[in-house]
Image: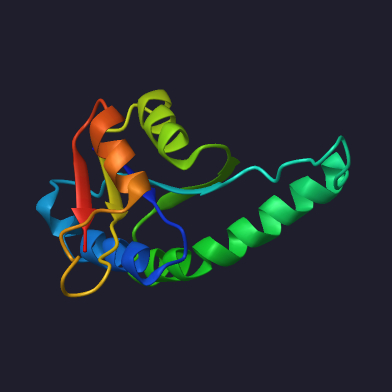
Amino acid sequence: MKILLAVDGSKNSLDAVASLISHVNWFAKPPAVHLLYVHLPVPKVGGFGPSKGDLETYYREEGEQCIAKAKALLDSAKVPHEDAILVGDAAQTICGQATERGCDLICMGTRGLGSAASLVVGSVATKVLHSAKVPVLLVK
């Protein structure tokens, strides 16, 4: 079993990590977990912007910060995982990575917008639900 675990550092994504950890015994053997953070590209304005090296450093540092808690949770639960920080459209990248890595499941958090709007799913989660070629587990 291969699981793509998409995180963004939010409470909802950490809830997805915790949920996966609490249900890891569902599997006959520990799943291969691919922890993924997707950073939106920084646009260049009028041809001006940070250098490629500066951008790569920025993406890596911010990505590491966003996945640090998820990694710590997985490590403390002894759930083996590979980590990736990529740049692009979040939903497209999540679906693409799930296909490329041969994942059987995508697990990610969704966000509630308060009591009246708690049924509203975040835009990235909605796009993943509509585009994924594998089952998607959304954790609230």
